[in-house]
Length: 428
Image (cartoon, rainbow, N blue to C red; front, top):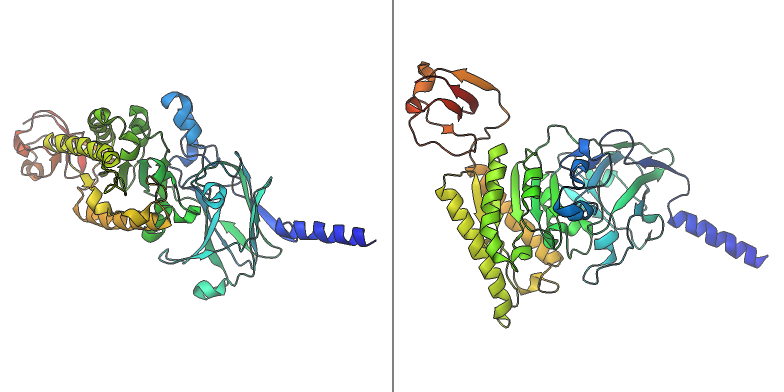
């Protein structure tokens, strides 16, 4: 009899730990488009993936497509008055695969309460109430939503794993609680970040501590994480895919993966930026490698980073000399990372992630103040340059986003961007 009672208690405790006791469950893949951090939500088939399904076989022989199935930077937002929130999710890989990352950072989820204006976030811990079984689970108990802003209903942001994939995710709340997923705005202009392992989130202790997610909270912005550890090779294909987006800014932070082949950097950066600006005039930020943190004692390792950064700078200089604008540069000194910011000499700790995010917040504020006007996505208007209001125009670009130095009234026939409008010049 005692064995039966003990068994029943164990089963009851297991059910409670899995969040299955008296809860209502909501599937993030059902209904509308609820998955944030996807640049192409309508091409994602409502799955937790970072690249559109149309690119499945076209990117680096499928290598980037496979890497894009890891859910770094993806998250859902929802509103509820629940006192208990549980998450159950099916992982596509084993929970522990990288020794330089915690199991939470690799395969866990992370929950934050969010203020209505998006200016304040507070983290919720699972207090060891989690599991990496099938499904994996995380449970958050004894929540008082009124403590956030005094409202009965609170908004939450739930981040996905950085280095694992998710095939299914559900959020459960105590019975009787309200619940609503928030849909991704159709007109949202995200920040798009392409880069290597630090971009993907290595080695943050948990998903919310990756610098891209920190940046998103700090700026209340959707960040599209295109971090591909060991595979950020500046391939033409990834630039072509990114060029279909209309973000606030493109961030190219791939130098740590390119330091072994510095001879390829200049050519690929120049080609990639020209491709981006041929299709969109959004700002592009080129970012140097932070360098080897132990450079004092291991100078040879730092030399690899130095050579990569020199090639990046040459590419930037060539592009600016060629007349490309809306192009910005962040140096190793601006990043400002030091010995205490790294786990293994390559990947940042949580402290390093915080310093990364702070550097980007500062740089993006500068870009916002100094960028050129956005001149794409406008209707073409045909003008004869005898039209008085255009004859003295001073803001003229070609379709590659380059400023034209020829006076407006002397432009040859062709298609230009004049005062923010696509303009066909038919006569002098």
